[in-house]
Image 1 (cartoon, rainbow, N blue to C red):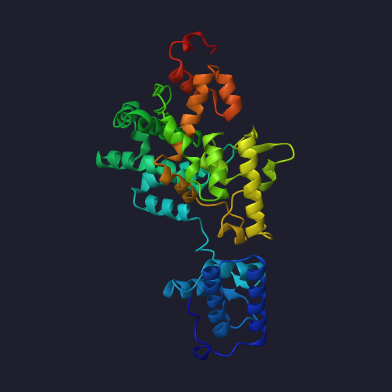
Image 2 (cartoon, helix red, strand yellow):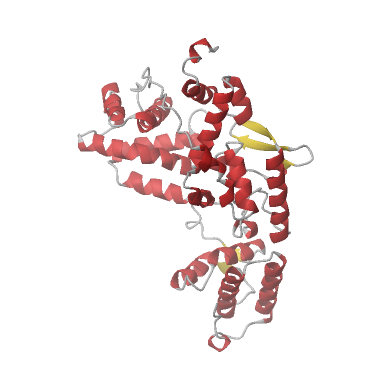
Amino acid sequence: MVELARHDLPTLTDSAVRLLADLDSVMKQEMWSTVPANKTRNTLTVLVSWLGADAPLLESDIRALVDNRSLKFSGRRVTQFLEARGLLIPDAEFRRDAYQKRLEAELAALPATIAQELSVWIRAVRGEGKWEHTGRTYRSIARYWHVLDPILKGWIADGIETLREITQDDVKRAIATRKGTPARSIHIVLRNVFRALRQESVIFRDPTRGLVFAGIHKTPPSVPSDRLAGVLSHAQNDFQRFVMVLVCVHALSGTDMRHLLLADLDLSRERLIVRRPGKRHIIYLDELTYRCASAWLRERHRRWPVTTNPHLLINRWTAVDTTHSPIGTTFTNIFRPTGLTMPTLRQDRIRDEAFEVDDPLHLMRLFGISSQTAMRYITAAHPERTAKLPR
């Protein structure tokens, strides 16, 4: 990385020199990689050269600098470094949830009445309605919107000006445009929307009330045993090996793994706690998982001995992220060389257990899945026996 020439910048003040020395100390202590370390130091050097270090800096100034020369500068780490020392004036607009801004833009493109009705739905789902409940994130609502958007466009094209005009036949036709899981998703989203609007007295009747969607009894896909046996051979380090074991042995999802906490892993008691909304699932470690977990803990401590991120799985970005964010979803790309996807491997693990034991309660205890999901796997594995199972 080529650093900025010092003769192109104003002379550093004493306070600026001390601040850069503090940054050098932090980077050395936290063992930052060379490229992000150089980018961060370059960014802070330019800022304090021109703006000084005696007063807090505007986050908008940092963003303007990074936007102009993004390949050489790194705004995120500088922002976190300055904020931790009380030397940052945050940009409130920039920090608004990206999914919230996206939803607001989508609403602005809709007819006024429908936009106002869906604004009420979003507030209710966020937990700000008549009855208090655990609110969903804007990211979760954006997923619902992805399903809802094409349906809304179809209704608007047909001349619908308010959701009060929607009938049960309209809902049935919307569901009928898809099959299987996509159709079920439409049913779930529309039911959520109209129940919330009925709760908030925006509509007087719920067109999804009494509408039952038939269950999907599709057999989960099976992975050839020779391909499954070679999955772990594709692991290139302790992180990848640990993640693959959590999926292939314990059938954890990406969301489960991203939110595991370091405190949730107790090697002395040989268990791992998986926290899910409203409940928790305890995994008792087998020998392979124990070895992989131990190896990852050693590697984690070796690479980032002073990180304060509480998550069990971290990387070079989240290890020094002062917001303590979980790792991104791209970590699941480690399964690409196997030719299999993470959901496929997870489903195959549950399916394999269902073939061995035709007891849904066993699947529920072992994998922490719901009764409906457990019965789906039992039905797929033992169609001839499910009529005898207790319901």
